[in-house]
Amino acid sequence: MPDLMKDAQPFKFYTRLHLTELTGLRASNLSQLLKLIKKVPGSCIYHHTHRFLQQHQYLSPEPPNDFAYWVSEILGEAALGEELASIDTIRFNTIRALREEIIETIEYYIKNNFFARLKFSSEGEEFHFMKSVSFISPTKYIAYNLSDFAEILKKVTIDSIYFHIFEARLRLEKPANDFSCWIETSLGIKELAGRIANLDPYTYTLDDLRQVLINVIENYVRNKN
Amino acid sequence: MANIKDYIPIAGESTIEDLQLIAGHLKGKVIQNVNSTSLGGGVAEILNRMVPLLRELGVDTHWDQIKGEEAFFEVTKKFHNALHGRPQEISKRDFNLFMDISNWNIKNMNTYGDIVFIHDPQPIALVKKRKKNKWLWRCHVDVSNPDRRVWRFLMNFILNYDSAVFSSPNFSRRLPIRQFLIPPSIDPLSDKNKELPQEVITSVLAKYNVPDDKPIVTQISRFDPLKDPIGVIEAYKLVKKYIDCTLVLAGGTASDDPEGVRVLEEVRKCAADDKDIHVLLLPHSDIEVNALQRASTVIVQKSLREGFGLTVAEALWKAKPVVASHTGGIPLQIKHKYSGLLCRSIEGAAFSIKQLLNSPRYAKRLGENGREHIKNNFLLTRHLRDYMLLFLSVYHKEDVVYL
Image (cartoon, rainbow over all chains, first blue to last red; front, side, top):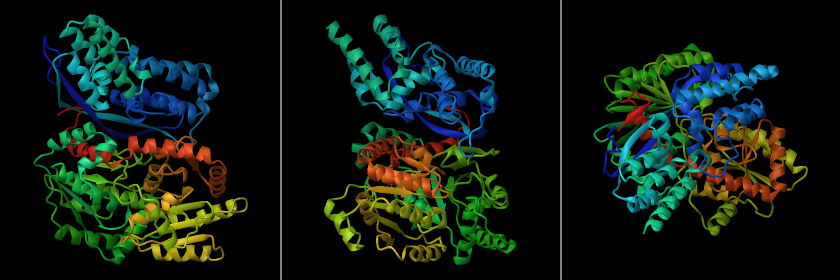
């Protein structure tokens, strides 16, 4: 992939589109779920902890990851569901570490709630493991300064914002999101880069996140002028 | 017919730009779709919209049909039912007939595509012609609990494909080939889904003598036992004890579905003693389907098995409250009590219909949430994107692909 962050380089917007690949693996109780979480590829863990961001951009009663939803709604283990839903995904820099946290949470719960492992989903309501196949492509949008950058943020798809904020950091294991990296490395504006890096993007819908980013950048530009 | 730019007001300009971007990566590739009918049923409906749009995006897309006679389609209908888990008597002669017609198609059909995209089981055996090109099998059927003998028979062919595509995760099983999840979609600009003036809705009701003086409960479906039209009548009768309403059962037939006429007769017999039940055999008129959906107070889809259930997406797109079975791809479209109500029995369906008829504000909220959900996940633009990514996936085996 071309380097997005060379010194004094403009920011090239990429987009990420994804296809869902089925694995045929399914779990009908907590023990099976745990066993498969340990075994499936990282792309599966990524899919089930990030799918909601792009599929439910608006009002949705579902918690922010598929494991939490299934455990609460299908197995009726609301307490474990809440624990899984509140895992602070932004803290993790690798899928590996995120997977470990999920495993520990479920193992601890099973150890202390013996009867939870006896619950089964009914037929047709099993947990199906899937994975994301990402296709990453450059778009026509290039920003040369902060004002350009804010204008382009208004136009690009939410898939592009998703790629630079979520996928670049966790799946491609970069130190921070692409926007913060560029603003700090190429523009040298550490304060603004930090402000963006400190957002918890998992608690916004993608459209709200777009608006927050635009506001933060436009406010900065206005105050500097 | 709408062109790709007409979707900008609904999907957004950048979404259309993304489609153009992906299409550019398919330049030089010929995509050949193959199915068994050009008219009737969800597959033909999707391809009728999809093929021209892919072409407009610059993807060299074609659509061919295999040839088959009535006896062949009788057998493939049995396969279809058996895959849905319905007991069928399938003889050795049926399998032989399937292979005879398939072999004729194998001999006479040109499979010229760089990517040959086979839809459903009817043309599945064409893969025996496979050379160096890529082959994809698109399964529109609910195969979560298939008849083992038919599934094993089909596996002889499935294993020769590069990838299989299913509409719901429930249909996936351990396979030695890649398998993808691509739910189907509706076209918001088609005659079936576009906005309609009230005069058109009123005139369609008048044409079919459906009065609008009481709430209208509607199921739009082919006349097929798996759509359970008799179950819908029974549910309606339970509702009718408490709420005066009209039931509309409307649908057409597909040229590859010889069972339709028999089922229609049965339904008519069952509805004969109630003047408030309207059984309508519609011509292929999408505007009329659209008008009936828009005139309805509640829409039902009480299928026993369902590939995906596009009629649910159509109803939700019109912000209608829907009661539908927890089967196939329907739970992907309806989150219970959020974007509609799911049911598992006649009694459950009746209870939900009563709830919606008696609580119009609740019904309205479910319908509005449903429309938003369809807008975000089940429109044609998402489907076009997924198909183009699927075509690209046959040339890339990795999980992160840089184009």
